[in-house]
Image (spheres, rainbow, N blue to C red):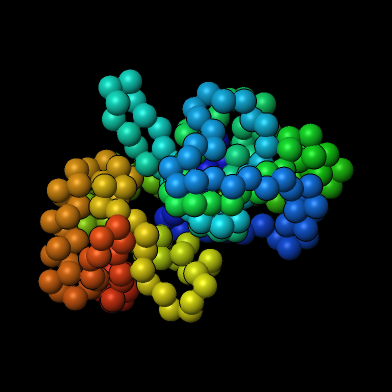
Length: 225
């Protein structure tokens, strides 16, 4: 997925080593994005490696008939876009700010200089790409074979895991995911997502709010997953 780090807690929540972070941040440019502003689109040239510094970024693809699939929502500290740089190939998804964001950009020339001169950093990116590839295979398997309650429970738990790495307050369980986005991620209607979430709310597993979900009983979700 072009180096996309997903919210489900497999590869997407893995951060880079402190040494590689320092090397990359020595070359960063900063860009601020307003809510819903586009960072890049499908087919655009790979000019930089990116990191979410503040806010959240949303990644999606849109079919010819207009149907959209949300691939990921990234939290602060997560890097993305490395595969297109390694392949020197166009982007394969759209990147858009969910809220007001600040994004770090490492220009392609600086990125290639870092990995060309530091084999350990190149190997770190290789392992990261392999983990993300493995996650993609698992995601396909789950999408085809698992029922909605299992998939939704896993998605919420993984989103919570990703959120916990960057949440300013310890124990914060509010996930900024809309029911529409969850439907796009899982390939089902918003109504199907709403019915399942309402059932779990009645069981006091979670609480629904406008634009976000708060997890109350993660152990119950783990049993469902």
